[in-house]
Amino acid sequence: MKNILITGGAGFIGSHVVRLFVNQYPNYQIINFDALTYAGNLENLKDVESADNYHFFKGNIVNEADIQKAFDQYEVTDVIHLAAESHVDRSISDPMAFVKTNVIGTVNLLNVAKRAWNEDLSQHLFYHVSTDEVYGSLGDEGLFMETTPYDPQSPYSASKASSDHFVRAYANTYGMKTVISNCSNNYGPNQFPEKLIPLLINNIKAQKPLPVYGKGENIRDWLFVEDHAKAIDIVFHKGKDQETYNIGGFNEWKNIDIVRLVCDEVDRQLGRAVGSSQNLITFVKDRAGHDMRYAIDAKKIKEQLGWEPSLQFEEGLSKTVAWYLTNENWLMRVTSGAYQTYYQQQYTNN
Ligand code: NAD
Ligand code: TYD
Image 1: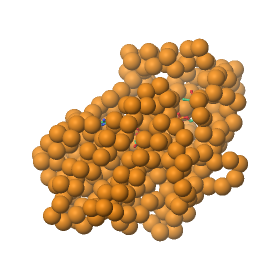
Image 2: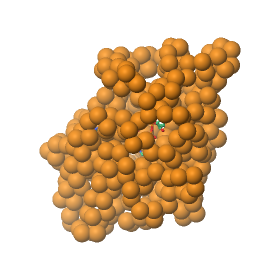
Image 3: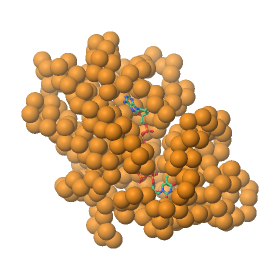
């Protein structure tokens, strides 16, 4: 029996993690703790919302009292912490929002958990979900290892690196049982269309320009979100105390090649002439401090915990495009209102 508080469960990755845990572990109570920011959407969890072991708690990790209330109400035994401000471009225009949620929010969560579990810290796990961006930017060669020194380059990655340090400091100082995983770029259903792949699908559908930063030569390592959720399940159950696990897709792509691939897949699924949407590609001003290359060495999690990605990229991308084209209402709802203002501020004058 466990009562697991999953923070950020209404977001992109969090919703896949919540679904997996609710379905896979009927003996666990799953408490989805989420502030429902622009990125959080309970619609993502429609299929599990009436399950007996699923509970939603609307709360903000920046307010310690919200967390305390959830801990008291559900006698939380473990935490899987995903709640975060997660978009690099937003961190460039508003770094303080990232400090508040990602740094202060994480420390609040650690403090409440430490107090609640004080009698026997060894019985409770604080699992912190982080990103490969904490390692900085790679050149042409090399891969991020668990031992790679931290070298964050954006306000987003600096805030995530800081939260990772606090988790390790609480393990070292107070003996909290912790585990951290650092994952590469995720893609798949339910991702907010500020991120590259869903933004492309949405714009191709509407035949709007496809903004490619700089020359499109930056490289990312892409992983299907359900594979990340499975990795989180394995790390939660089998990960060793105070260890770090890098999670990646062994799947590096140059942005411009991804853009072309997405164009052709959307064309194919919409019955348009394949290749025609590539005319929409528009090179725009580069992101400030744009990290050149991310690539994960996921050998440790494979060898020690037996996890590896299950889906080939072409298959995952085809599933993702199909999901966005089928779930038009979801896309319409999340891109109405505040998204329009964000889009204009981000992409006008570029
Ligand atoms: P997301 O932006 O889609 O979702 C974030 C969720 O957190 C939303 O539901 C939002 O409402 C909630 N949230 C935000 N601020 C909150 C606050 N102050 N209190 C409570 N809830 C709050 O993010 P995502 O892409 O699903 O990322 C989830 C986690 O995984 C993050 O910690 C991120 O750093 C990490 N991560 C993401 C990726 C990726 O490619 N998306 C890769 C590696 C790691
Ligand atoms: P993104 O999805 O924002 O993830 P991250 O910055 O965390 O890797 O961006 C992925 C890559 O795509 C990154 O190199 C920036 C680039 N990009 C564009 O070229 N145009 C865009 O409109 C966006 C959102 C991203």
